[in-house]
Image 1 (cartoon, helix red, strand yellow):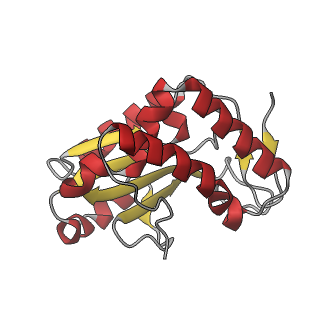
Image 2 (cartoon, rainbow, N blue to C red):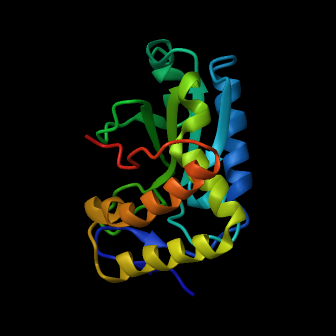
Length: 193
């Protein structure tokens, strides 16, 4: 199936086997730019699930000992193109990277290529994004359901601001199941204020 897009700039494409390498390259660059800051760093999100259709944005999650200390490294991250972004999540630092101007939308805005979620090491083992990624990797039928839903949301013309919210019911269901398999309680997957 070809890329599906909508007016708000959201589009879903077939899995690209280059995504893991793009994530690995970004991870190596982040570790080199701020040696010792990140205790853990992983590729998360749909682009981290082989075979899963996704928005072509590489999501990364990194764990640090102290968020205020990590915030002191904005300049080093900006040198790699990662700039602070506030999307309403209060339990992390969020950085967005938009690659070169050749990768722009119809309005001339640079398109996101990477998102970096910086969280505490204490919260690392129970982060929903990591748990859902692992579940999708081992449950292809759930990954297929998720891909169908994403395509349907985009095909319906759901705006960029509503895209994530429109996926919440299924994401909650799958995350609850994955957390239960690990003996963890259900927690809301919607993290924005």
